[in-house]
Image 1 (tube, rainbow, N blue to C red):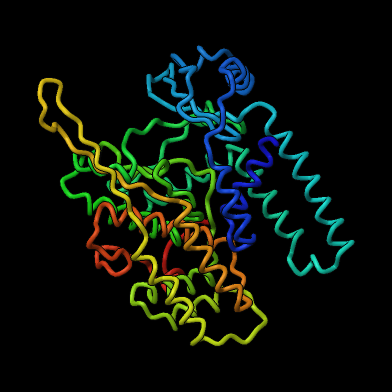
Image 2: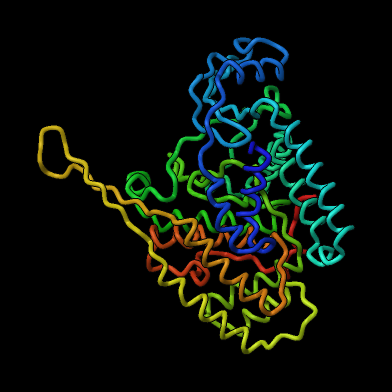
Amino acid sequence: MGATYIKLGQFIASAPTLFPADYVEEFQKCFDRAPPVPFSQIEAIIREELQRPLDAVYQYVDPVPIASASIAQVHSARLKSSGQEVVIKVLKPGIEDILVADLNFIYVVSRILEFLNPELRRTSLVGIVKDIKESMLEEVDFRKEAANIEAFRRYIETMGLERQGKAPFVYTHCSTKRILTMERLYGVPLTDLDSIRSLVPDPELTIVTALNVWFGSLISCESFHADVHAGNLWLLRDGRIGFLDFGIVGRISPRTWAAMEVFLASFASEDYEAMASALIEMGATGKDIDVAAFARDLEKIFSSIQELDTEIVIATRRGPNSNAAAAVSANVVVDDRQMNALFLDLVRVSESYGLRFPREFALLMKQLLYFDRYTRLLAPNMNMLQDDRITVVSNRRMRNMNTFP
């Protein structure tokens, strides 16, 4: 049906606090790779945005894309002025006009439906559509993504984390609303255990560093990275954690973070009554909730986390002149559907008690589930929420910290 409906499906799949479970599960299919646009069209967009020939800015641009998604594709290149290797993220032709037209149509229809059926007002249909529209239009304005990257880079610099984490440098002279030119980073995903072992002596420290940098951004940066799947979170060749693709970010309110802090502590200690109280504080409800019953239901859900299958795939590579194994690589298969099913169970139970959570909670939980899977691979004996090396900064210290405007 086109890019708008693919993005709409992705939004639904990423917002289990807003949509029915059947929809969330079905729209997981919208995350599949999209076919690339011919390079001639990409070249025309870059030339139009830069208002000059490509060879005036780049030594070369690889016509074969590194990646292709529903709204954009990425090409490797080299800057003419410095020889720096970069990547160019390019908005596919006509995408913005299609999105604006389609989303405006969907918004008008939602208003008409609420007018015709007052019952729909209780579901906040117009509010949900407005949230979708704002979120999707932010993704097609690469100036917003550039600002997100720069905010994260400032956070890393201000907190003295330059030796731990890195986001790509943005080349503003060749970045616009429709193209984003960034420093090319080299590394491996946090799911590639064999390659990580070749880069660092202790893979466990890799996940400790990644967690500390990410947790710190929750309150010390104006936004946090809200899509830390394996393609966006790398161990770089120099041992730092590389954060890529800031198209999806979250912003957490002090109230939600205060409740989230209690939730994380209760999860680590398996105190389900405290967890129930934290979720009640975070969610919107007009009902009196039986905390003890809610806690029992939560215990049933979270006890299943330990039963999640972390499938380790062992691939043996043999040397050219030997039958003996030359190397063994281990990878974890991160099953997004399995993780989403767990979170949907939490949402279902919470909704049965009349609770509805802000979208930022869904974004936070999904990232924590990603980190849980990385921890299982890189540090199987570590509890990521109880380890003394990992700092989850208290919300009570926020007013004493230098946060960005």
